[in-house]
Image 1 (cartoon, one colour):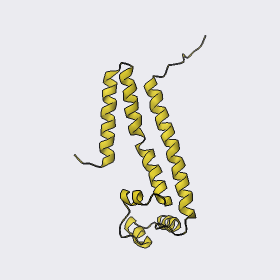
Image 2 (cartoon, rainbow, N blue to C red):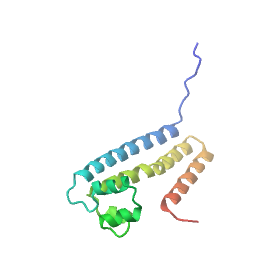
Image 3 (cartoon, rainbow, N blue to C red):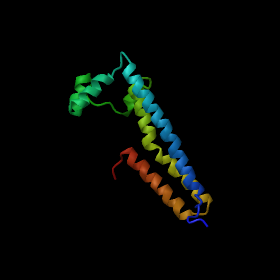
Image 4 (cartoon, one colour):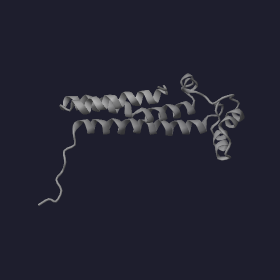
Length: 140
């Protein structure tokens, strides 16, 4: 006689887990590739060795960007406008990893609805929308 019964995992949980898994795998691969490219680039607008040394030295953010030659820290549009540099590849990977919860939540909400769990489906949609609002930085 078995002491523990094997529990059945709902399809919504499997979909959520698989979505997070594969997007995190993609994200970590991009971060690894971007980091390697950053250190191999010769004429990068953001030299990785200098950036790393500044962080290790304990400089403030404004001092780091002034030392590199940028007046302020780059925003998202800087990385989108320069997608081939290593730092941009790294940032794209980080963005995919951080925001992977959004498609996972909406996909699981769909499968919660299909499995006749409307309350949890609505809660998952609300959680997904709140996450999108939080990622956007909009203050209420």
